[in-house]
Image (cartoon, rainbow, N blue to C red; front, top):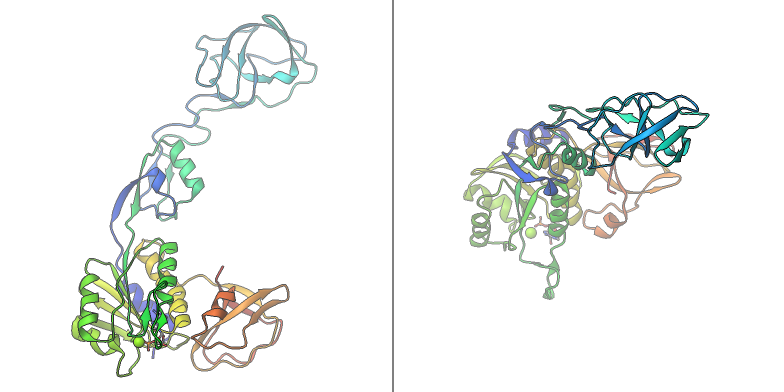
Amino acid sequence: MISVAEALDHLFKLARPLGVETVPLLQAHRRVLARDVAATRNQPPFDGSAMDGYAVTEAAPGLRLRLIGESAAGHGFYQPVKSGEAVRIFTGAPVPQGAKAVVIQEDVTREGDWITLGDRLEDSTHIRPAGGDFKIGDTVGSGRVIGPNDIALMASMNIADVPVARRPVVALISTGDELVMPGETPGPDQIIASNTLGLHALLRDLGAEPRLLPIARDNEASLRTAFDLAKGADLIVTIGGASVGDHDVVANLAPKLGFEQSFYKVAMRPGKPLMAGRFGEAMMIGLPGNPVSAMVCGHVFLAPVVRAMLGLPAQATPRRTGVLADALPANGPREHYMRARMTDAGLVAFGSQDSSLLGILGEADALIVRVPKDGPRAAGDTVEYLPLR
Ligand code: AMP
Ligand code: MG
């Protein structure tokens, strides 16, 4: 059995970064910027006014100036302004040639075409210099997950099309004769496929393009059909059938159908029967079927793999540190991801950590990470955890 860190190393070797595609700026939100993009213009493109007021060549208390025109946003005034003159100006308008400052309208008294500056003037020129925000050639760096602020900046740079990492297509194959989809009517010995839907949501959050395939039944023909339907995916994720029971189709049959295994079984709890390798052109990860195991493995393994495929740094899901509200017993030989709640007093691990209990996962805010053979922990100890919210 290998450690979680070793498993991640194997997974990063199996994960191949995908190509680049160009999308309209409006669709670039949450995508990964695949190449630097550069401004094609200066912003502002001219010296612009930051206030509503009067553009002047000099500002001194009591000065009387003659108005010669108006400069508004989108309607500049393109004559030079000389000593003794002023131009009415508004926020966002080009500052006329020769003007050195904008005196805000609150500091001015106007009578017809004449203005008189007030007794106390502000120091600021209220002029935003051309290119003061960014200049032609200034870049937005690749490798970031594009957010609303990046979109605003790229729009301002007149970048209408954005090169982004292609989303990995992930085929999700549930296995089991006992499974039906939510909304269907289960037979007396059946349950609803649950983690499949949870993983689908997780993958979407991660920026992947999940494809929910029909449930594979616990026989070779059905599993073969599922793998056929998975063709073209970048990553195939199977759920269940990963242990060594008679009906564990993935462990028993996937190698026969083309799965080349890189590792099997990880020293973790929940999630031990995890496997990964390649399947033809695709990478494949076989997750355990237990609902919580599958979801925890999603957070611990699928998240870093999808991020690596998107060209983001190949690293484990970032952990935070928190304080324990209650003592915890010593940990066993496997890395343990304990469902816990965040309270004002600190992290409280749930009493039952059985890997089938989705109800407890739903209540959990965090997964406390216990390293293998971690000794007993006291209330007040600092521990690492993965946030779930
Ligand atoms: P398996 O690894 O196939 O033996 O599955 C382990 C346990 O997880 C069994 O109780 C299965 O019924 C359950 N299980 C497997 N796949 C799913 C799934 N997609 N959704 C919910 N439970 C599942
Ligand atoms: Mg099964």
